[in-house]
Each structure stands twice: as structure tokens, then as C-alpha cells.
Length: 291
Length: 242
Ligand SMILES: Nc1ncnc2c1ncn2[C@@H]1O[C@H](COP(=O)(O)OP(=O)(O)O)[C@@H](O)[C@H]1O
Ligand SMILES: [Mg+2]
Image 1: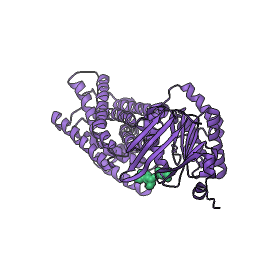
Image 2 (image 1 turned 90 degrees about the horizontal axis):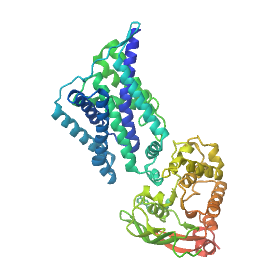
Image 3 (image 1 turned 135 degrees about the horizontal axis):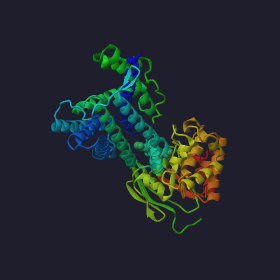
Image 4 (image 1 turned 45 degrees about the horizontal axis):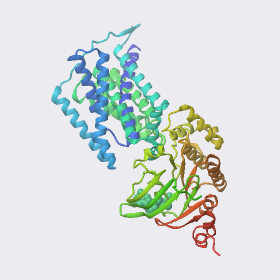
């Protein structure tokens, strides 16, 4: 029972990190209909900025986090302005967008690799003492990572569903042309979406770095976020979160009760089984309903 | 309704889709306070005309002047000049609620209080929408969706309201109600209206002036009454053979 609760808390926290990534994908996908392969580079970038801010500039954690978020936003918006927006202006096919995103990804990951090398680094924060409730030890890092991730998701929800700009993003995700008739500027929406992407990837990168390690290829984990959003139902934000939580919990349970070696194997098996029975994902509804 | 300077003045407008010429030298004007109709068969270029005015489609040559100024070339800037388009097929945001659809229509406006006031005006016009305020747009009936599309356009407080085939796919009784509302918008609220229709009889009935668009060219123009009585219009667009 103790192990179960420990694994559950850990699973929820990793699920929350997956949620940040999955929601980031779903956002870009729902508005621009392309998979932003550069997302994992944004995530690694965010983690390395925070890493350097602490280890070389000796800044406190919160300041490092803030700098990381700001710079990752700038990176994400620059990618939009330099790589995606010119292609959109020329009405390039979706495939070109994805290839361009892969190019952005390769470039950033390789620059990070040149500067830092490919080794795994420990994120420079002191390990927090776990909390004991009876015999159950709960990782305080998990609580912080999970808690902040959920706060970020809640803020994102409030932004999308309670503000004028959020309405603009949702309207554009449904029908970009009609949205423009209402005065919603497509390029303005893009800046909003990529700003959100920057925040999500930076926060996910930092917490993933703390939980595991910081390394140039750490963004590979975003494949899990893709699995999670497919399991949940592609393109929908709530579904992305549900899929992420299920996947996070499943993985930590497998690691805890079976073996961490089989963790990823189970993730992919799970994806296949879900798709066999629910081809549109667990919560996949109409294709039209995106955000 | 002769005007010295028309509100909307289109001269020699030529529009292409690749090599295909969709509008070939269209001249058209709309005066302040008028209801102007453009009738024409399927594929005549009616929607192209509308899309070109709101800059969704670019044009090859000609001029489009609105209130004495050229219109912006980017569609999202057009609405702030005072023009809104109710697009063909309504194109409401199906997953959004009625309220959200209406708020999207008011996107360029900032004053919450005035926005709510306009929303009440829209509800006065279409009480049905108020009853369904929290329902998703996609769950409305065709007629209600058309009301929502018109309501959404009104939320921007336009001076010129453009409608692309508002009767499309609606039951006759709903069409009558829709056109009655359009007339009221013109008479009671002073809205200038440019209307595009395949349903020629009803459009000619309510408009002040009308144009006949035939394969990208204006083939006839006159008051609604003149065109209703024109034998060529009767034969081609009203299905009257004598
Ligand atoms: N996106 C497009 N690409 C190519 N041709 C088009 C496009 N849209 C319309 N057309 C052509 O332009 C002409 C006018 O179309 P349209 O303006 O939609 O007519 P209407 O609204 O009067 O039915 C038609 O011949 C149509 O085939
Ligand atoms: Mg048409």
C-alpha cells in the first residue's frame, strides 16, 4: 500500500509534466494543424537556461525559472516569426511546416550540444527531504513539480476560457478565416500561442530536468506527451491532460511493481491497446471540437 | 437615394483565381442608408465580390473605396473600418457557445459595458438567441445559426453590413423572418446593407437598388422594382416565363 501511494504521487507529478507538453502540442496543432517538432528543443533550451542561471550565475531557483520562461518565450516566438510565419504567409503545405519545425529542432538541439556537450547533468537544486505520512514517503520535489504544473495548467485554462485573447485563440483554432473577419489577427494569435508554448516547454523542461537529468536530448520525452495526447484524443486540451495523467501513473506503477526497464515498452503497448479499442482516443469526439 | 459620394465605391474590379477570371471589371456603389442587392446564379462571382471587399481575397486591378478611403489589404483590419460580413454558409464557431460567438464578433471593441448593451440589442432582435445563450453554436438549428451569424456581425457595430446568401438552406418561413429583420436593421437602426443572393425575388423585393452579376460582369442594374419587372430578369432569375 505504501509503495502504491508513493508511486501514485510520483505518477501524478510526472503526468502533470507530460500534461504541460501535451497541451503545448495540442495548442499549436489545433490552431495551425501541424505538429511542432521543435517543442522538445524549446524544452531542453528552457532546462539549460535555468541550469546555467543557477550553476554559473548562482541565481536563486525562482529567478532562474523566470529567466528561463522569458528566454524560452523569446525563442518560441522567434521560431514562429522566422520559420513558421513566412511559410504560412506563402500558404505552404502542412508537411513543409513540420519539416521546418524539425529543422528548428535540430538546429537548437545541436547548438546546445556544442555548448554543453551531450552528458547528463544533475539539475543544481538540493534534493528536498521527502515528507513522511506514516510509512509513506512522498517526494517533496514531486509535490512541487506537480503543484506548479497544475497551477500553470489552471492559469492556461483561465486564459483560454476567460479572456478576450483566449477567445481569439479558440475562435482561430476553429475557423481561422472567419476569425479574421471578426478582427482577430492571425499573426497576433500566433504570437500568443507560441508565448504559451514557450511557458509550457520551459516549465516542463525545468521539472523534468529536476526529476531526471538535464541533457541536450532530454526533449525526446515529448514523444510521451504525443502518446498521451493520442490516448486522450488528439487536439483537445482536456483529453491531453487526461491522457497524460493516465500515462504518468501507468509508467510509475510499471517502474515500481515490475521494472523501470519495461516502462517505455508498456507506454507503447498501452497506446496500441487503447487505439485498438478507441481509435479516436479515450475522449476523442468530433474532429471539429478542438480546444 | 442618389448620393454625391457613395459609402462604398467599387470601380473596374478584376479578380482572378490563378488563371481563372472570377470578376471582370465590376462597377458597383452603395450609398449611405441603402439596401443594395447583387443577384446572380451559382458561380457568378457573388461570394468572390464579398471576399474581395473584406480582403480575404486579393484583387488584380481596380479600386475599392470605402468612406473615401481605400480599404485595408488585411482582412482582420477591415472590421474596424465599419464593415462586417456574414459569410456564406454562416460559419459560426460550432464548439463555442452562443455568448462566445457573439463576443468573438465584438473582438475589436474594448468597452465591456457597451458590448453587453449591443448584446442586449441583438437579443431584442433575436430572442431565440437569448434562450440559447449557453448552448453551443453547433447545436442550433439552421435558422438559429443564421440569426447567430447576423447577431455576431452586429456585435461589431458596423455601418455597412454585408450578407452572403442569408437565405441559403433555410425554410421559407425562416427566410421571411430573416429578411424582415434585415429591413428593420436598415429602417430602424440606419444600417447600410449590401446583400448577395441567388434567391432573386426576395432580394429584389426588399432592396432599394440591385445589380445582376453574370459570370463576373454586371449585366444589369436598377431599382429593385425595375429589375423585378424586367422580362430578362423574370426569365433568368425569377423563373417567370410569359
Ligand atoms: N478558391 C477558388 N479557387 C478557384 N476558383 C474559385 C475559387 N472560389 C471560387 N472560384 C470560382 O470563381 C467563380 C465565382 O465563384 P463564387 O464567387 O463563389 O460564385 P457565387 O458566390 O456567385 O456562387 C466560380 O467559377 C468558381 O468556380
Ligand atoms: Mg457564393
